[in-house]
Image (cartoon, rainbow, N blue to C red; front, side):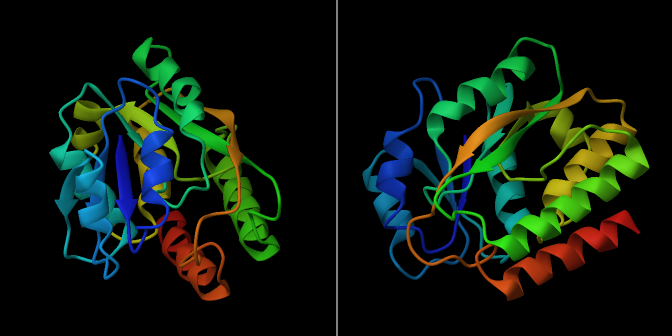
Length: 210
């Protein structure tokens, strides 16, 4: 279970407590200044420090550190429910898919309109280009570790989630999505909750689509 984290000390206790049995946490500290790494370590998580800033850089560091046959990714801000990991990981563990994404079903204003619209447009363009029936490019997902490493993903910023889908599709992966809950995050948003963060994400993903 790979949890990229930047200043998520307040959210980590709840996130770790909500993980199902058998999902070992790897918290990747991506330059936090609020004691994120210390909180995670005190609660029993394995901590990896990745000094290169960027969502993809943190995810890749966690992937390199992981040892399980199947790896899962999830934001460490409390917006996702760990209970949904079982549904996301099961098709991969059962050999029915190589990549499963969690399609977010937002509650309580968890997903600002500008971020939701940007995500919908990117997903629509992805469907047009690949015929993959995906409606969300969200960060909760599961894949086989060795095969994911073999994709040799290069993006170290916000294009990482889309590059994973594109490279998996080119490799002939079976890619699916399942609905997952998406709730208001703990603390201040640094990406999807801000217009600037959404713009950076769209820019990075649009570059990959080109």
